[in-house]
Image (cartoon, rainbow, N blue to C red; front, side):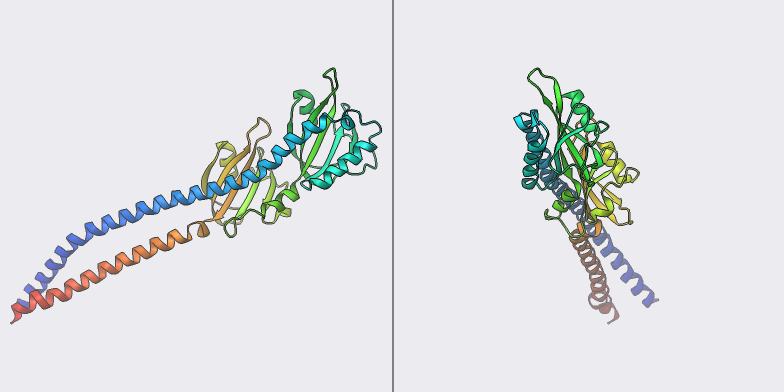
Amino acid sequence: MRLSLFSSLRIRLLLLLLLVIVPACGLMLYSAWELHEKETRNIQNVALRQARRVLLGQQEFFAGARQLLPTLAELPAVRSPGDGRACGRFFAQLLARHPQYANIGLIGPDGLTRCSGLPLDKTVQLNDRRYFREALETRDFVVGDYQIGRITGRSSVNFGYPVLNSQGDVEGVVFAALDLAWLSRHLTSIPLPEDTAVTILDETGKVLAHQPDAGDWIGRSIGDAPITRLILEAGGEGTAEAADANGVPRLYAYTPLSTEPGNSVYVSVGVPRAVAYAELNRIFQRNVVLLLLFVVTAVAAAWIGSSLFVLRPFEV
């Protein structure tokens, strides 16, 4: 009977201790979770800043082409190319100074190439290219689709700009072909977390540039991938979590490089979730372990203390 009384008393003391500890633990867990959510948003913002850093590098190439082509369209060698030899030599010199371009050239209003920075074995018909047709129609700078160049044989996106005569009539279209393999190699110069995947997409979900394994990705259509659909539907910038083609969970940050109608291009940075949240998860797990140790220590101390300071005096 006495043993039962002591045991009941000990349990009541432990229950009283738990009434104090449990709310405190709950408050500590809630605070830890709030901190976890705040740091999660910070990590997502960091990923978005990384996507913007990639974006800035790519904007230079688009802005460079936007400045280069109107300048070329005003040059006498381009407006009056003659047999194309002098024009071709001039474009070849430009190519040597601008390695990002696979080719620079001039297309006549009939769609036939008039001159090219790369040697031409024969005249090439390009009147079916979207950048050529839209440059004729809009009389403005245009960005074309992903293509395999008929002159270069390389994956590229072509920029076009109309060449006008003194009467304002279109005499041709000057173009620059952005080399997508070169663009993918350039992505490796941007400091990013380990195992980060960088993708540049057009509005159809086709890959224009990618790191790593650019050769396996350039020209590949990934429009059906959940993350791609989200990026294209969002039309702006943001973050999301999704598995990649290999099933690796990633934190994605995306932002538009160009939002011109018909010429939308997006930059996506995908960091493995394990890498993105590694430090945060380590701290959260450490805090949970410390909290559990605190609870176990408090219960053990209460159990021993109840024996030494409460129950033992009654046994005497």
